[in-house]
Length: 130
Image (cartoon, rainbow, N blue to C red):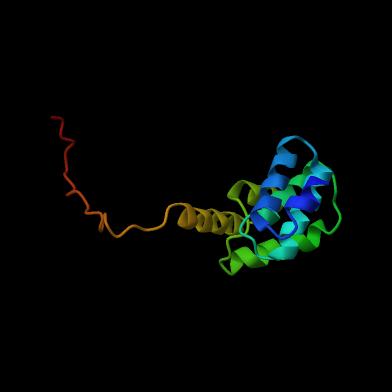
């Protein structure tokens, strides 16, 4: 098996392998690859998201409540663990969904001090057309 030869301890290779398998619709194999990633790194940034998505696509509902609760707890504590669209499918809590989105935005678009603070434009009573 290719995965056991190449991915024996390479986290990135297991993650990419799982993503490729999921893209091909081979969800059962993708689940195994993502579980291997989580064995090597239980708090991998988004492997849990891809695992849950593959499980849902494969109709594999084993441990889904426990995994969902773990993800919700992690998001509440500020961990990068789940993509915002997957949060929409796992919980109906707007606070958790917003927090997952905020964590993702902060990771994807970190604050850059080079731009400095934004200044507010002065308010006018009338609309000005130039």
